[in-house]
Each structure stands twice: as C-alpha cells, then as structure tokens.
Amino acid sequence: MHTICQPAGEESLRRAAALLREGQVVAFPTETVYGLGADALNEGAVRAIFAAKERPADNPLIVHVADRGQLEGLCEVTDIAEKLMDAYWPGPLTLLLKKTDRVPDVTTAGLPTVAVRCPNHPVALALIRESGLPIAAPSANRSGRPSPTAAAHVYEDMQGRIPMILEGGSCRVGVESTVLDVSGDVPCILRPGAITQDMIARVAGDCTLAPSIMRPLREGEHAPSPGMKHRHYAPRARMTIFVGDDEKVVKAICERYDAAEGGWILAQDRCLPALGERRCLSLGRDAQEGARLLFQRLRELDEKNAAFILAQGWEAEGDALAVMNRMARAAAFDMIQL
Ligand code: TXA
Ligand code: MG
Image 1 (cartoon, rainbow, N blue to C red):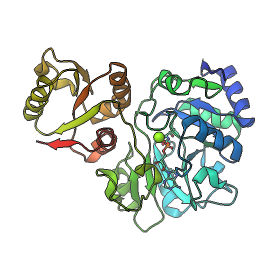
Image 2: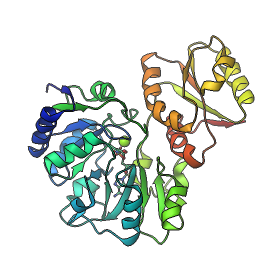
Image 3: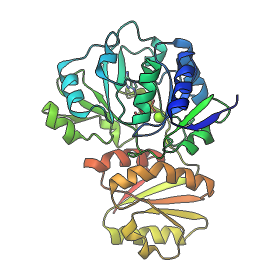
Image 4: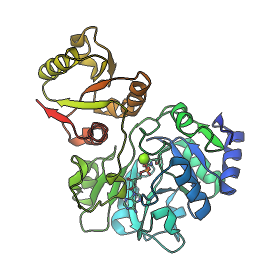
C-alpha cells in the first residue's frame, strides 16, 4: 500500500475523512501524540488499526470525539465525568465510561467500559467533524516503539501499512493522555498524563494513582488498564535512569559513561555543560519539556545505535509523573536514586 503524507488543509482533510468513512485507517496529529484513527463503530476498520500497529487484540482503544454530544448512545456519562469534561475537555484527559452495545467489542477489547477523549488539536477536531464519526485511535507507532510526536515518526513506523498521514507539526504535550477510571467513588489515574492528580482532585475532590504507575506489574497482578502490562516505549539500547541532586547525578552518569564504549546521555539543559564532550542529547529545562522531547530522543538514540543510554530523570511526582512513567518503562525500571 502506498502511504501519502499531506499537510492538513481543506482538501487533505476532506480526503482523510472520506477514507475514514470507507473504513480505512488515517494517522492524524493530536496535542499529545499522533493517533492512528478509524471509525470506532466499524469492526473491520478497528481491526485494520490493530493489524497496522501489530497491537495485541486484548489492548483496547480510545474513542475520540469532537464534542460531548458525540458521546450520545455510546456510553453512560456520570456526574463526575461531566464535571471533569467541563474542566478539561478538549484536552489530554481520557475517561473510562460504561459502554453501550453500539460500541463493538473489538474497540474495547471485550471490556464493559469504553475510553473516551476529546483532543485539543484543531486538525484532530476538524477531522472528526468532517468525517462525522467517533474515531478510535491508539498512538500511531508500531507496538513497542516510542509513540510518535511528529509526522515523520508515523511515517517511519506506518509506511506501506496505511493509506494516509495528515501532517500537523510536532505535538505540544509529547506524552499520551491521562487515563482515568471514574467508576468508583474516587477517580483513579491508570496512566498519568498532562492532566495531573492535583488537577483532577481540584474538580473531583480527590484522586488516587494506580499502584503500578511507577513499578512493574507483579506476577499474576491484575492490570487495571491492559496497556500497562505490555512492553512499552523501548529503545533498542539498555537504559538506566539517575534521579537526585544534579551534582551526584552528573558524577554517576560520567563514571558509567567513561567506563564503557558507545554510550549516550539524556540530560537536562542545566547539566549539559558539566558533561563536557560526552555524547549527549537534551531533555529540556523542566519535566514538561522533557515530556515533549522524550519519545523523539528515544527514536534518535535508536538511529544513532547507542550501545547504552544514561538518562537524568525527575522525582516521579506532580507534573513529572507522566514523563517518569514513560521513562521508567523505557528503562525496564532500571532506576538509581541518588
Ligand atoms: O493521548 C492519547 O491518549 C493518544 C492519542 C492518540 O489520543 N492515544 C493513546 O492510545 O495513547 P493508546 O491506545 O496508545 O493508549 C490507550 C491506553 C492503553 O493503555 C489502553 O490499555 C487504555 O488506554 N485503555 C483503553 N480503553 C480502556 C478501557 N476500557 N479500560 C482500561 N484501559 C483502557
Ligand atoms: Mg500507545
């Protein structure tokens, strides 16, 4: 299959929407990462997403809508969900709600809930509106690869597998949306994102974190969100994360780097001078910039054939939790606290 890449515009949006209505798969930008979209209510179309991504069939998809009205007939919107939508939609917040029979089991991997989100990106919203469909979309990477934050990353992974990629620049947030379980009395974050625990607690009164956000699932432990049990975001090279005081982190990273050949460093801007001539890529000034850059950096390090990666991390809390959740998985939880 030939894959065309086109900047989002009136003509290309019409073409992409027509493909979606025919049951085909189209990649498009959102504020978090690029998505691999298809008609959420068309079983065959949803199966084509799983095939293009080589995604395990037990990992459910997020259904993207342009507004709340589009949820009608798809799921039961609770009071607390309503309040959270008021506060954070459109935006990087995915809510798990009880689904109706209209949503096919392939979309939700047989679960009784459906994940729904309204992306805060003009191209995503225009595409959903133009197609008139709720769009099921996982991140547009091949399973196990870092999520794509630019159209070029989607092309790397999806070339020849899908008919069209809509281009819309680099993604502003850079890590995927917060996935929130709102079925209990207190909402629970299953996957951290740019909408933080504090931001949810401010609206819902309280908010908890799933225990496996910063550690591997234990043998036999139930995965609250199926995506958490699959290997994720893995660069080819082994990665180790160092967290703590700048000076100690720089010292520990330099020692490891100097003891072997072929290593690369990911560090925050203020530590770059202290790393001297060592091979290094920036993770920006703060955790938000780190989130925006991380997946791109992991792809770059694959290209450079890094033998091993030494990365400076943040304390896994507040608005750094999202980026640290991704980094920890990329490093298979090899983290050193200094
Ligand atoms: O920012 C995002 O959320 C991006 C953009 C494209 O919107 N999408 C994305 O989709 O990250 P994906 O498929 O890569 O991740 C969806 C996550 C998975 O971990 C999946 O297991 C979980 O959400 N999920 C989806 N439906 C669920 C459900 N009904 N119950 C529990 N977890 C669910
Ligand atoms: Mg994904």
